[in-house]
Length: 504
Image (tube, rainbow, N blue to C red; front, side, top):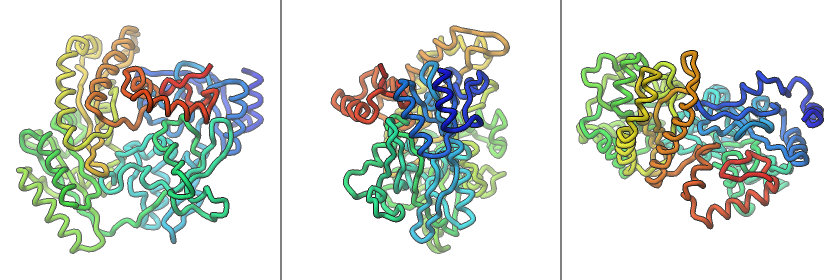
């Protein structure tokens, strides 16, 4: 490996490569408490050409390469599967290349965060529409394209961030560099449209979870931020899951243009209030579930009409409006006006001391999510004996449930569900059995949710392989995906092991 290290060092220079044990372990995890893979080398390239050279060496030496954006993903997506290989850290590639105000398109390096990009755009009264994932302060644009990310705000209006994609520059696993969309025509002077010039090859790299290529440059549609907005929060009556789904369906069926609609179940409201996460709900007499909406408009008249339509739906479904100030419980105002969308989305994290959730992030039809949530409750009861084993160590029972249910484009929602747990090393002691137990429980929950017919978007190491292992992919579909992978990456260098695409 020392000769390989020297070759790579010649590409990026000494400052941007490391095989230090401390650095390697810093890159060996994502946000879950159990999956780990320690790379041999961590490297930070500055551009597509350096990445191409790195991948060419990796192919010659048959060394796997794992791209890493912000590292905020679940399911172990941006670290090696097992130990070894190269982690390709994209954080140096974090610049804005061009703002095309006339055509409302921004072109950026793929390692830039949604936070940095939208901070820049706000000075021009612009935004990206979908604000990326809930971890968008640090999540990279390239990684979010790789996941069809949602959750950071604007998802009901704009959908997943890939909906705004115009073109990509991608380094293929063998080192070739291509551009998609309008840039597939070498005479095109700037990105302006994703579709045309033949098949939509950009779509091949959307949601690929980093197996088909390394995104290096991304062009996105951007939008003027409307000058008027309204945001209201409501407490739901009994049967809140069914009622919240009914509300979302009515909003869609009446064609009301909403920016965000989000349902937070009573479990979150109650526990979040008890743990001090939601101080504005501590004085609520009844800790019931809440639903909130945000709308934007270009005139006061347009805003008033939308508010009237939405409030009528809320009133007809027996909700109770909370007062307009954040201190009175109006989380919608905080979420939009104070950019709370990047501060609380994964609010199961840290709800109990030293406990982190093993999660499941997927899309589902609106009508289906109450059944999914009810089944997670049933799953929790069925696994009480195993949960008790975790309680015996942590002195806190694991919590199974869901974070916010977010309305996305069409009649779909995003579900972030899971359960809280602890890692095998806890309070100064190593409990080796916990790793196996956590993996068993996580696998069981993911299989359960999968059988509801949901659509996974963030898949990473664990979920991508589980879909294959449990036979969820039809055989012809999986073989087709595998044939594409073999064509682009014959040695299975890039993100080796995801979807069970292993090298020799």
